[in-house]
Length: 420
Image 1 (cartoon, rainbow, N blue to C red):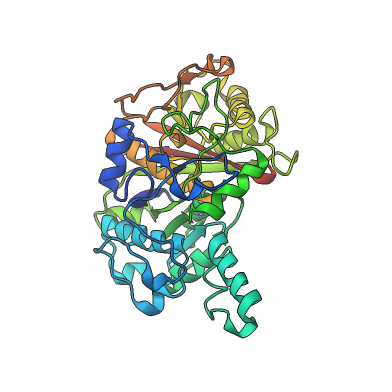
Image 2 (image 1 turned 45 degrees about the horizontal axis):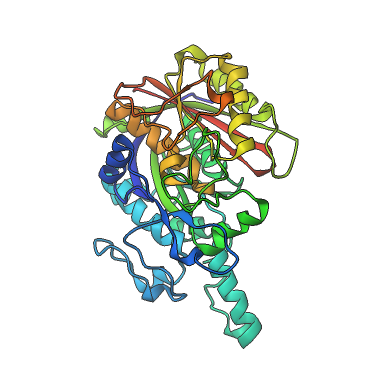
């Protein structure tokens, strides 16, 4: 391990709170929510009504050539044929991130530039292909049916489309997926194996992606978009799903400075840990997450007292929000100084997309000098009262921040970023 410094030099967004860096920044600073009543949930026997919706895209048809998306993006027909909806979102976010980082074609396509992706695949695309197989026969299935639907679809499509030559892999650890992608991309650069990495997270965020969680009693059944996603509120009743895509460009700091790149933040390091407890429920004392936080501190040499802001994983579930606070108490102390908020109160929960999306929010917070609030809290949960939960935006620059993510099976990550 050569311990190269790693920095974030480019960002791209297709999210419920905006489809550009400027829109996302404005939404975070003004606490503008992307959560709405979602028409496709207005069906019999469906108690779920709200979702973090993606605006400016029409992707309901099963034929990608009929999709409508912002006119500034031009996508060849042969490329589009292999896409699921979240691949389209990610393509647009990639274009933004490339422009933002000012990378040339040669800097993108070479053996020292790689890409790590995270998605759960496309449930709807898989469903549509299986329906065709059952009704029309095996040989009538689209030749792109596999590569457009299975878990690795994001990696397959973007690596080929953008001619990535370096390290590439798709990660699947549920809601920790893109945080794992961030962490292992950091390792590639810190070790000297790669000079830069694109980290991409994407989710369709549609009817068939989100509603299966209702069977777990994990989704909010609130009919009020202003109250549906409210981490740390005493009366929270589950998460609100969302889709979209976010791209972060990570680079060796020396390489980035040599080419005059804008640097949003330094990625100081990370840690991970597992609960080893339950397939779907977090450890009630947050053991695995506490281990991830401790490992992040050990790997960076940064102490808990230096962290100014924590972007928490809190999804607005009764069990998960409190388990995470217990992990924070174990590692930061019972009444930590660090400000805490969950931006899922504005965006909804992006599932495998969440980690890179919230890492990008942390980079914006460091670069722009603010800390976003945990919105929609009417009555703070008693268990959250010892903590510094932000209930309004704080326009004060955090120097060091932590982003936390947790997924099914007890997968946990803690990422640390700081002012470069």
